[in-house]
Image 1 (cartoon, rainbow, N blue to C red):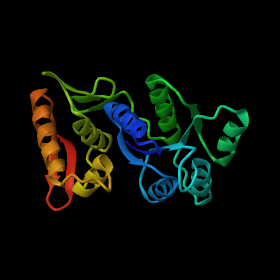
Image 2: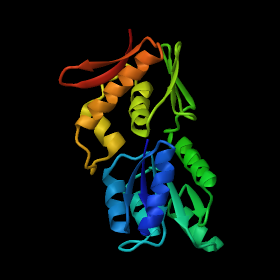
Image 3: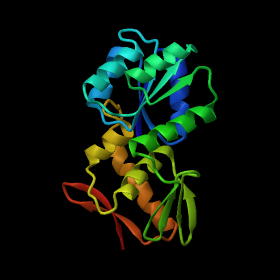
Length: 223
């Protein structure tokens, strides 16, 4: 699942991205309100995390304009302000939740999970297809012969396939969802991760295969 993080303090943003990516979320980071609005309006995100105090356009203005434009993606607002009136302003603008700085990592992740449940993008802790299971807590791939741990990108690619068995996913769609539209990575990273996943599916003894449909993309199937 891909999140948009809008936070103008770059070191703080990098720390939040590391926390979220460690929990296997794909994250796009922007540092001002104008970019936040443009990305949120045109990108495909499961959730948005907006800081209130940003240059260009503050988070409340971004949120209000998104809601006026019909964007319904759930939004978690971050702020150092603690006044009740500020929270009410955020909720009235269309925020789904509100988190005051400073906060602990576990609280942030809990709020994000709650946000995704509201969006319908919540992923069960365990997704099963055939004799393979994808564990969303330990980030392991399991099968009759044992289990292996997946890297962050492997997990995100596997999650797309396991959530859409039999559905052909293009390389471009996988690239955009896992690495983001503005990613500097080459398209061959998709093929590399698919190759690693194929090996790991065999290693756990599952009857599940990643098949290719020439010119169209890849899909999950039972052997």
